[in-house]
Length: 134
Image (cartoon, rainbow, N blue to C red; front, side):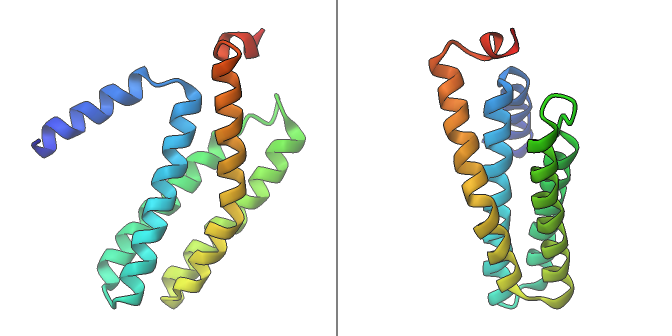
C-alpha cells in the first residue's frame, strides 16, 4: 500500500471511529513511539529517537487538551498531573538522551491505558456512547 493510500485509510478510520477507539489508538501510538524512542536511544540512533519522542510528546499533548474538566473535574485533575509528569519525563529523556526516563512514563501510564480499555469495553457492552451521554 502506498504512503498516500495509507494516509487516506488512516484519516477515514479516524473519522468513523468512536471516542473510545480514538482514545485507545492514542495510547497505542504513544506506547509505540515510546518503545521506538527507547530502542533508538539505546542503539545510538539519536535522530530516530528525537522523532519518536516528538510524536510521543504530541500525543501526550492531545491527551491533555482532550480532558473535559467540566464533566469530571477530579479525574481530569489527576490525569492532567500524570500527563504533565509524562511530558516532563519525555522532554528530559530527549535532553539527557536517557531511555530510563521513558520507562517511567510507560510505568505510570500503563494502568491508565488498561483502565480506559476496560471502560471502553464496558461502554460497548452497554450499548455505546449514547447511553453514557444520557
